[in-house]
Length: 594
Image 1: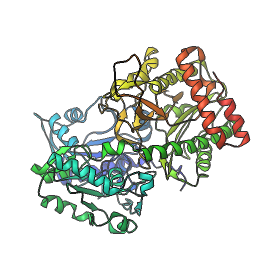
Image 2: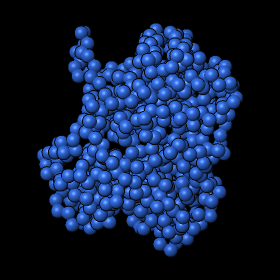
Image 3: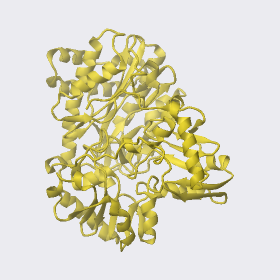
Image 4: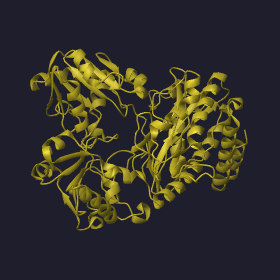
């Protein structure tokens, strides 16, 4: 199914829905209520049935939450969404800059005393524990209640019931029996009887299955309990699992999701829980038997094996060829004739010519002119804008192939650009190159190197309000944890991790710039004069030309120019055979030395 461009936000209905919610709050005896953008699995991506935040407020961003009292309604968003939230919400909703303003502080300012209600299935144990600590010493208490949105959301969509499918061993590189055995041994060594896994991508990776419960993410919803003897209890609707029963075998027992609560209450032994993803309802029910830790699947999933990495390399080359076809087509079209929807649709059409392409990996960000200043802009039929001469065009897109997940951003010149735009573009490029060229010792994390991506921008008094990079899954979510590249990331990089490298700069109301490649963390050779061992570096996965028309050469040093010219030569060498004669001519011009 092609990307939809229908407007999904209904901000004008927010005030009326807020009145209904406040009536529910009075009837339930709570003085405030929390509405997260989350489902019971605590992942970033949710099905339409779980878009409670968007239904109430109109805000459709991929991260945020709302806190409602009888007198105030704050929508908390980070720097990526501060323009968008103001466009998509109406009074009495107000935007709150998070994390600069913490929820506990906001509640203290807007509630003298009373109960803060929350749905215990939609918040993690870590969230609630943190909030309770922030409210300690006040007359405000936190209280689990039934969800107050669901009774008033009368046309709420049904929960997803897509079929799960087998992800073949030749694509995963390891059988699910081997994965279960390996992780179960770690549980036994730690003295843990079992681990509860709630993240859909973790379950899919562990059992070598994929699904279709969330748009653009090949995951299936469920919960899994991995025991220390490698058995798994899989809580998933039977109708979803009909095509994977034989694959799962006798050591994986299918159970009704409705039985999960009773199962947890009767469980004997220590159960490991991920405090960031397991619902508060489960950790609270386990009480003393809960071992609050991390998801045992997350790190092994992040460190791709040789089969996964080779598949990623091949899928990225095919995706690069599709991107080059698109860019050649775009350059040939007269300025002012295409719209954002035209461009996004054409790019998806080109990608779908690949028989291994299943769907896009997220809604394409097709952003012209001032829309490019919105980091997570989603074009609709209402917002659709022409690609006009003299403006930049930012396209952030990706695909789910049967052998890999891609994500790439390019910012392109539509006609002549001002020196101010070119300077900003070149500063962003310098940051992207700095990360790409970096060599570092084992034990370094995202927060240790994030500044390399920002240094050129900082020198000009500029910055961007998002992380420099996120983890990427293997035929799973395009945003994958725990690895990322940001000022808050403390997890050391490990070989096999795939991350994005995407610094940017955004001038509200005018333009936005972002350049994104995907990288693999790989071992680096020892240096003849060095005393460090186990060095790491980044291997580039993405080979698509960077728009030379946007670059001010004099702002680059010789090492940066050498890197860029080498990168473009590699683009030409790898992608040229995959293109038509006309597209090859475009590639030759686009990859000329700077």
